[in-house]
Image (tube, rainbow, N blue to C red):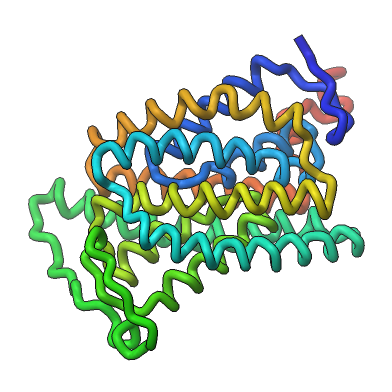
Length: 308
């Protein structure tokens, strides 16, 4: 049941890709992230070139994020004004990131930069999230009172020009920080094939101090626009989007995202963050390991061992 991928120039089992799309879609809907940070490493593990994996799975991110936004918007949990500001920055970032990715491909360094980006960003963010959430879980189980959290927003947010009201998020701040976050997410989308949700969600919560109930849906809304623009640019400038691969992945992604969004309401916030932190950290370490040895080789029997 293999199918040939013309751009990746490899044959893969298509039912496996559908299942993979559903699993990553579930993660996307559950945590409010694009899921690209998980999809790309798995595709690379299956033998797909990193540059093709990063560009091709972007359509899956769009599809699964759209499915999640539909559900969250029905619950009134999406700040569309905030999302549009971030998406505007994401469009600029995507353009810059695609050109940077093209330059790195010409130098033959694209695969190395992809792996280093995963190791750096996912390793740091995953470790911080895991540490914070595990601390909360342990305090709760010991019956200790939670430390008093400083809900004051950074003063610099109020000193910037161009203030806007974001009633859904409970904010009256400059549009510059959300726009800058969008630019950063756009660059990440082009280089790593991710929506940037694993970074944006913590920043939206702990820096911008948005209402927790709208963070996930707003993050997914921004991811849809930014990643869609990235996909079009990658296809036009770098010719690294494998349409066959993209189509198979998104078949399962839409259903998985709906299930994930439904499940998210049944878990505590700290448990969700702990699970996400562990997942992010594991993927980052995996991609770091790829720099030195293919993880699949670790499961192979060394020459001569089987012979005794």
